[in-house]
Image 1 (spheres, rainbow, N blue to C red):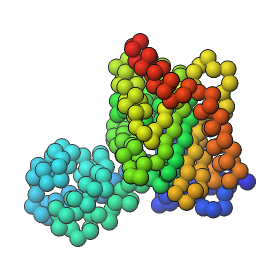
Image 2: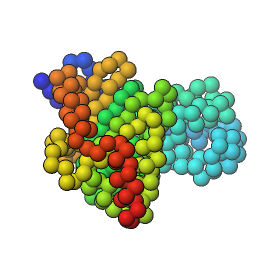
Image 3: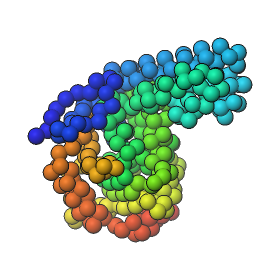
Image 4: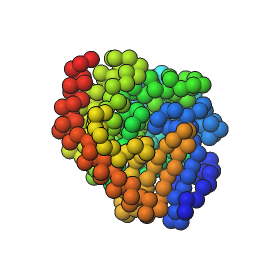
Length: 306
């Protein structure tokens, strides 16, 4: 039985052992949901408070933004973005800043809260799972999955939201998606499989140039030994994914989760029967799609036609 509950602002959204969790949200991957939710305001509050703390510590040390920026490897403009809550630094940057400020952990203690603040509350559980995944299987039929998106493609999708997102929210969401892509360079490397409908690769979101860059990026990612990218042709007569996009994540302890979005809501299933069936369904989808080698050749053909 599916348990239906919300997530508190401080909850990471990781489901308990009792069953599935259904969290309501605004469509993180597909970008087809509503406008900014209250939880986004809460996350922004954390980021702004962190920025104020960073600025206070910098001024206490008598450092201007340019000097501090050089010490952590960023420009004064980037430092300003951190302090004003418009960008979120990586955990490594936070630790480096703490060291420069001789803050003895006063800044580093913010790391977990700042990392969670990058995401809407409903997506925090999935973001945490991605960090622990040993296998991730994803089927998409609307847009290229966030883990595979270029920055330009992300911005094009976010600019299409109605009602429009404000610039600060767009910057936070772009930074969050780019941070999630660390999964490709993690060691030990997780096994990553992506199947997407051909229509996803033909939509010229943002224009021909942005699509060209996105297709080139897919070709590069598809060369990684732990990544398989497959295309489901539109002329395929059988497709076990007709119920819509979903992602199956296997954690280090072997537990499986199924994440899905539809009409501005998201679900994170933990029921063993549902997760097993979802994984089996994904296996059928993979068998129906073009092989990874055929898919990369297909993408090359699309790229050449632009």
